[in-house]
Image (cartoon, rainbow over all chains, first blue to last red; front, side, top):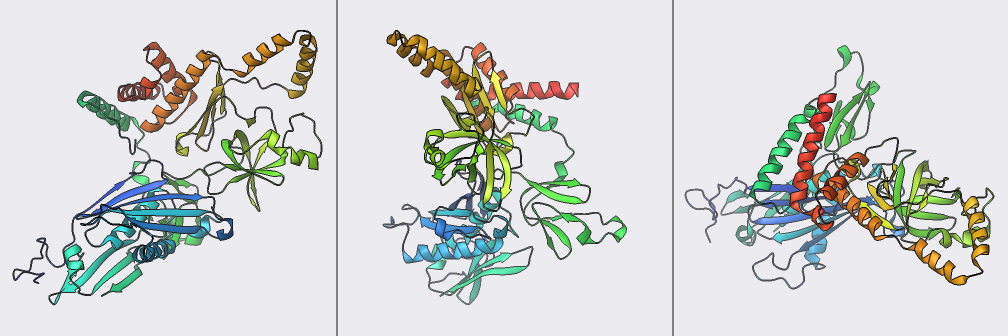
Length: 199
Length: 333
């Protein structure tokens, strides 16, 4: 299948190194301490942050830093055919872990000892790049919650199809089978915090 | 004003927009260029380059990066002499010693209660740092410890004062008659930045017969007025009363009933004041006692039902009143 036309345009009309349109909105969840909706093209993700609050499970309490937890789930209606099990499968667990590690690296956890920060991210519309959209949304939600952070993490995916490097893959490009990589960076510190290659 | 989703019709929308614009134009412009987001560098004067960076004190919400001061939260930059800090726009409550707070008991533990106060940890109220119901100063015995549930139980709402940080967390104290269990009223939670620290946090609105406690942690109590009396005196009085009334037992029962139930009128005022706080919280205005009284008066003078106070029309009206009020105070000042 041809993913880049001879004119150098992709299936959705973008140039190879062009991102989809992004949109962010803060304060979507009223009861949360911080929340954000993040859209990358047709991918739409909502993130809610609760905390820093008292640790629910005493045995997990850390006396010198905050405990960061993350839960990733996909809404039943987020994909083309309805999902049976929106969370708890291998993929969700893995993405939860990735988001948790990425966020933990940028939150200044030592300032909030003996507390816990919960991050909940849910995919409302999945069109490729959910991983990076979730990280961006979680980052914004944490900033909205007033949690001290070293930097805002920004993330995007890229792939390689038809001997062309492509930025910000959508679902069709993502499932084409080419190699792709998700990168998360801290722009101020000029560091890479996440680099995941999935082929 | 963040995240307000009121079902407005066209005219209400226009009115609200205009009022908000006016509010914006009235607000002071001193600090308007000092807002930062996460990872913004904060410009600092280095006093002819002699003053080394290290001599500048780093405050909350800042960190050092390659000799630069970088914000770690979104907020407003504040400077006090050499101290630079960022006041976060939205964050959980940060306790300060002496704050009056309202909280909810979540756990009865050995010699202490654990209290939810919207902070990153639960606060601790020791049995030894509160007045006993009999009002006598003495050592707390094992019997007192066993009777702790007779003072506060789980899910009780209480009012206390921040005592300070100890090695095991934040400690509270309740060494006065005005502190203690709150009954017959409503607890409202608003964002903590809407409550400013003031001289008075306990308010008795005599005209309505209600108490309003503006907890610094954003928990607001609105309830029936309780006379803060010395328990010892009260006990003596009630004892003598009991003796006199034992002759006709029916009267005691009736009297007790009257004591327990709150009159309808006071209940209505409690609800009105609570709704006033809710309106202020949805609009994002600072919650002060003067404004609450003003809104309650406004609603009763307009003959509005209690539930109508939460409608969009009343919200728009409150916004317009706020504009009026701020214009007046600005003219005065």
